[in-house]
Structures are given as C-alpha cells and as structure tokens.
Amino acid sequence: MTEQDTTSVDGLTTDIAADNDKTRYAVKPTSRAKPADTALATIEEGMLIKERYLLESKIGSGGMSDIYRATDLFLQKAGVANSTVAIKVLQQQFVDQPEALQLLLQEAHKTQQLSHPNIVRVFDVDCDQQHYFIVMECLDGESLEQVIKRYKPKGLPLKSALKLLQQIADALNFAHQTGIVHADLKPANIMVNRAGEVKVLDFGVSQKLQLNHDIYAAEQQSQTAPLSGYTPAYASPQLLSGNTPCVADDLFSFACLSYELLTSKHPFARLPADKAFEQKKQASKPAHLNILQWQALKQALQFDALQRKSSISKLMRQFNAQLWQHTAVAAAVLVTCWGGWYYYQQNQTILTSYEQRLADTTAEQQQYQKLAEGDVSQLLNVIALAETNPLQRDALLRQQQNKVLMHF
Image 1 (cartoon, rainbow, N blue to C red):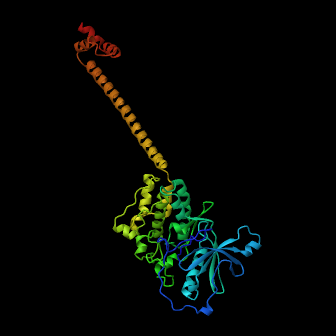
Image 2 (spheres, rainbow, N blue to C red; image 1 turned 135 degrees about the horizontal axis):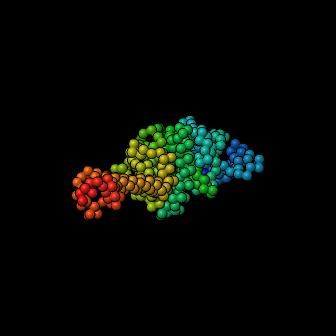
Image 3 (tube, rainbow, N blue to C red; image 1 turned 135 degrees about the vertical axis):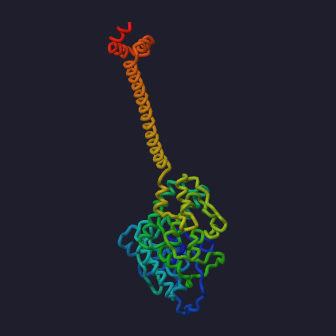
C-alpha cells in the first residue's frame, strides 16, 4: 500500500492529517473488532519484537502502518557497526483483515525485487504474536520535500538538483525495467541521507492500489484530504481518470518534482493536473534552465500523454547537455558551411579569371589570323598604331616580308 513513509528518518515525524499532499485512503467501518479481552498487546516504544528487534521510537505513521526506529539485537551482538533498522508494523485494527495483510506482504515482496542503491531496502517480513511487520533500511536524512522547503524561494542550483534527479531517474528506470510503475512519486516519498544519496520509497503496491479501491484503509481525521491511492498534485491526468498506471505517469510526476526542485514551486500551483488543464495552467521557465533544457522539461509536463513523447532517460540527457555543447555543435556546422562557401567563392574567382584569360588569348589569336590573311596596308596601319604586341608584330613582318617589300 502506498503510504507516507518519510518516516524512516531519524527524528522525523509526519503529520498526516495536516498535509493534503500525503497519501490518503477511504474506509468503510468494520464490525469485526476484536473483543477487549482478546485484544493484542499495544505496540509501543521499548517493546521487543521476535526477541530480536527492540523498538526505540515511533518516527511516523501511514494509512495502515506505524513506523518505528529499532535496534537489531542480533546484529548488535554480532558486532555490526550499524544495527539500526526501521520496523513498519501493520496497525492493530487491520490485523484480522486478510486483504490488509496481503497488501503488506505484497509491498515487502515487490520492494525486495527492486534491489537498487537508490531504492529503500527491505530486509525481512515476519509476524510476532499477530504483529505483522516489515524490517526496512533505516534512513538517516530528510525527505526531498524538506530539501525543497529549505531552498525556498529560488530552488536548488542546477548542478545540485541534477545530482539528486539522476539518482531518482536511475531508481525509476530500474523499476520500469523490472515491470513496476511507482504511480505515487512525490517529494515526500524520496529521502536524501547525509551523504547525499537518494532513496525512493513506496514502490510496494502503488500500482495495484491504483486499480482497486482500498476498503481496508483507515479513515483520516481531515475530511478535505484526497481519498485516493496517489497524490493529486503529482498524478498525471490519466491516473486521475482511473487509467492503468504506466511509465508515462511516472514521467509526469518526475517532471513535476524536477520543476519543484529547481524553483521551489509546483508547476501548476499544486492543482491536480485535470483541474490545471481545465484552467489552462502553464508552467513558466525556471531561471536555472537554458532554452533547450526547458523545452525538454515542458514536453514532459504535457497533460496529454501522447504529447509527452519522451522518457525519463531522455529528459535527463537533455538536462545534462549544457547549452555550450549545443552551441559548439552549431558553431562547427557554421564553420563548415562558411568554409564550403569560401571554397566555392574562391573556385568561382579562379574560374572567372581563367575564362577571361582564355577569352583574351582567343581574341589575340583571331586578330593575328586576320592580319596574317589580310591586306598589307591594313597590317601596316595596325603596326603603326601599336595595336599588337612586339612578338606578334615581328612574327607578322617576317611572315609577310615579301608582301611588305612589294608594297613599298
């Protein structure tokens, strides 16, 4: 089940009712409450589960589970330096509901399939005295939501944002290759530890929850909270319409959180995508992006899935391609074109000069032939006017020597 699990952070507590962006579920009242005399022992701090996990503090809650920071005594006794884990326990009111237990097991199974450095690790799933729980990696850091708030109002610098976005993209691409779509990607479901490493949460059954209404989830105190298995502010119009989740939906959510990371603002003022489409909302260009990067992000933010025509990998390639790289390519093309034009002009000049010389030579030959075959008086007049060069003059006089002597 898709829950708000920013809870796996040391000292971080999530207020579910106060934040409308958190995942919500509707519920139908159940009449199968356990009698008071058979009620389970309440999970609380200091409790030992499975004679191994010592619960230290409650660090958050979700729609069906509570999350505790705990110490793995087995690892501690073995001398393991980091023996801290997060324990996700199914809430008591859901213990006798097989479907709720099935969702918890599916979450553990699917997340275990996603063995990736940027996806939270699930170590084990078990039961102790009807307390069903998942043992997870305990994350020491903060949610991406907190990172965004800390960098208001201008957003993260592009270089810093890209370091986080690349890790999120790697996690999503790996999940997609495995055949799992997140369908509830949002800043609150992404953790950043002290080393700057990103961990994506809630991959478990997010796809399944989009296809079936969850009748086993707890009614939230806030009546204004969204009652769906995804977060409307980051869901694509297709998810909001009830369509089967697909990769294009994760792309839309990824583009929304990318925009928010770069600007500290939601691209559509936190309106659900269908409402933003009706109001013809358009995101403005983030100051950190050049025009080519912005075109790629804007395409990923298209409400129509067919118009996105992109992928998370393609979007990241555009983000990482700096403007100077495109400028260098354009400059190289320009230089090549200019070189070709210059070569063409030079060839044209040489060709014109050659043609002119050829024409002059032909004219001289024609004049020579005309004088050689013409009247001697005409020849003498041309020589007298110096209209021939010395070589032609001497040649003509030698050739016409007899005629010239007879003329005089």
